Length: 181
Image (cartoon, rainbow, N blue to C red):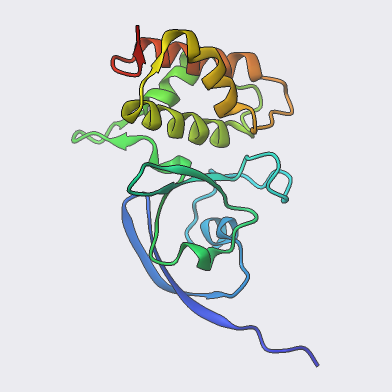
């Protein structure tokens, strides 16, 4: 006879909105909650081991956001916390049109994707970098290294790395305040 499944209520903020309390079995990944309970399927199950970063979400913290892998992190770890999924990067204008984030727009302008499966993770990783650079600008001669370090953990099976890197590099260089002389 197996032990009964323990269920605990989960409350958090997702893309700026309060969620919960919702009953979630203990040990359920955040990715499963996003997909199955909240209908947010943008973050992807890639490797299921936290290696590829296709499942990455942003954990909103006072010191600035950081990347979290939703496939290997239990949903209850996020209790009372605030996250942003790839669906939360764009915003809706007063007239109802969708306004892409600067990262999303840069990816489109640079055709920085192929199949698109890993794109949510790259968008999130690049967004974390951009928000960090708003607080802590870097020197122009550091841009290549910093962009590479920010995206290096993300895996693209279609080998779209060059375009992802170019899009983020170009965005960093074109955005006032992210780079010093």
